[in-house]
Length: 427
Image (cartoon, rainbow, N blue to C red; front, top):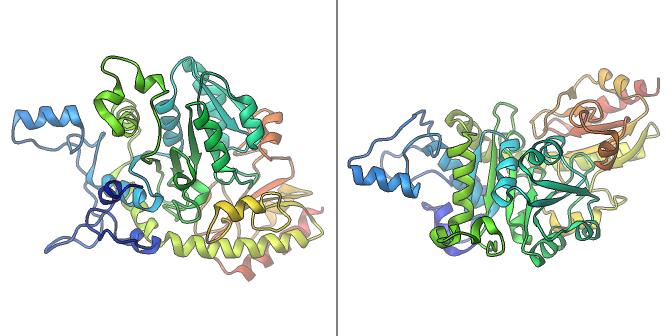
């Protein structure tokens, strides 16, 4: 991130290098006499102007406040905080992670364009690519999560390569640097869903060549299962000169908006046109969650590794997918791209998923991730249940798969709960 971008994301903090934990609690909060120590909820629909000229300028430039569908001070403070944590120049917060992914894809593609996505995807993302974007004339090839497979699927009209930092629920790690090289060689962009990367704590994809980074803020950012939200962040190194959305026309969007054209189109599309707005109250809850994210996800990652090793050694458990295990085929990529832990989610197979899930007494059966509580779910029938069988298996989901998101409980209590439930899973 450039120095100018850094100052934009953290205007009230010194320009020196600050740690993640410091940025997470200070970004987005002003300084001065009478300024509150925290991010307030501004539950306001519209903002005043003192002249017609000021109103006209704001509606042309969109840099201030006019109407909360487009910009809200509470949401803006959270956007600044996420930008600082992800090393981004600009961030747009939206109503959900699905809204963020949709906006990201449509900021790079239009009718007649093509996307290459890896198969290790959240079911909702796969649904966008397979069910929604084709209605808009955008096609997608969904391939194995390897650079060779992505390269083989590239077409002259490919505008976007899409992957997840850690695949949901296969727990495979994307080779972000290699995917970036493949995309950029053809003038395409690389989008990474970094939800499992913990808002830059475990991984900052922009540092490895990604152009777009999305999050479901519902997960580790909020962290308590109380608010829905999503975000889309961009850096400064994206090249839009070969994307006709930005390069065509007289004047072109690049000529009129310059380096900010990418972020401008995303905000115009996601909020102004489609209205996928993050509410101020949800933004406030997410801001609270971001302040403790490093504490929670650090502990959760440690516990996840302990539990993954326990499960791997248990005779009632089939394959365990977790990049922190040395036996994982993705361990080397995890060491390359992840820092401070290998994440809080794993998947594993049991003989009788229904008996296992129904026998749990501490771990809860619920389709969420990143909660303070440990949650488990059966992806085959829930999160990926609407996908064709071949697509489910390509995503790393089998009828025996369990996905587990580890919370902040004591590791010993969770291990005992798993051991008890595994005794039932053989029946």
